[in-house]
Length: 626
Image (cartoon, rainbow, N blue to C red; front, side, top):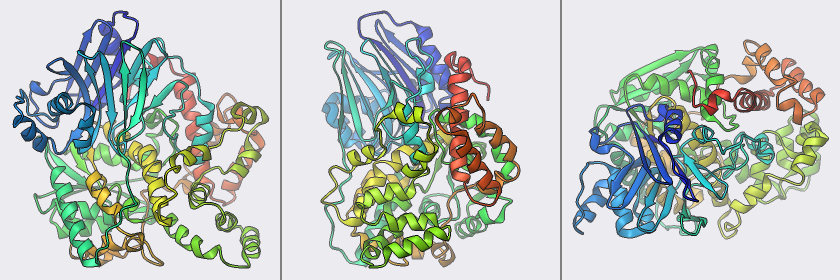
């Protein structure tokens, strides 16, 4: 794991060390072990290294191979297999790193090398002989890659805070991205919240021809749900077991201490169970004093069964909230998934013992573990009911707004239902809250346009597969992967996700959806496979998210803090929303209505704006005291 960056002046202007040094310094948390700079005239590359494989100086980056130079962040888990294949073709290697294998692979296969890479990665290669820049991001967006391009200078980095150190980059709010954020709690690709700074979408690569100045972005991989396998339950169990074992085995290659997050849920429990087939595992759990949010009892059950070296951290809500403003800086885009807080604290705790951590991310998205998947299954049948309007009215007057919305949108396409049902501020609420000036500023923008683009090639897919496809092309790369990458890398911890191995996910995509989700059953085939690996108490317990008690906090310890942040007259919130509506939202919270998620989103928005636009001098200089 590392932090990468670079700068290319397209019209020949010399690049200097201090320009790349500023970007490297902004990424020191991603790579505290080593720093490197490579400059040749108008091309400059920078790298911060977190040493995982081949701890020697042979792994130093930027790395050269023949006439090609690379900066790479991530891990290629099948690099030994590729290395053997390349050696059979006459290639020689000076290091034991996967980075050198990427360079050799590109030298041999060109852009098609991406088809061979199995792992998590963001890298950029300068090909001197062709005078082009080639960069790519892994299939699920586990590793970030952001860029700025104005036609004269191209700047890229793992995090946009590094890009902001460059003098050409002017900080301006992308208002449409703010509207998207208030819908989703995150900013969808390719936007970042900053005008003219973008993120390369997952499963895409770019080329920049330094001769013609032509910049192109293309997709190299699509998750295919259309090819189903007609297998028995027993056959699926065997295939899944073999696939997960291989995925876990590949992710245990490391020259530094390695462990696993253990939440007490099915997915992290599955990873620990399969890791234990290879070694004694160090496991890490976080617990809460608020019992409704604490799962340490179940984590201990798994730890005891597999005799892991188990570590627990019990925290108070107030212990978490002291990190809020630090996380605003680290996440750098507007981002309101509050589970970022416990993920960050757990990462900080685990880093005291290990440098690499495995997690259970991807289980719910693969096998249908969330409530929303059940809602879609119900919607398919409820839409046929003759008394829907009466039911919707009764739900609305009884205060069941989400349930009423569920009935109201039954005639929409299921991806539209999905967006409407999972959003934070829906269109109706926005129209009540937004000022006329902000409505005019974003004109006819709609977040639905993004999802319509994502779903344009999915019409032939089966009903439930369309929702799985939607999540893997929106929520997974833009929310889930962002949360984990930033929370871990802010603590110089590498995180690996066996359930998001692309070969494993491709196999799961071939499973008919009725093997995953049915009435009163979730993740059916995955649980069936795990029956001999996890206790029934783990497999059958009700799912809990990795959440913090927002509604309680906003009525107690954080009441005044949140109020002062949101009602800041100089903040962003009151420049785009009517003050009386925001005050009503707060008062409803105090009176017992649970508006915690909306209030958290507004609080984060103002803190983000204050951090990057009102108090941004330190960021431009690459200075931040954590």
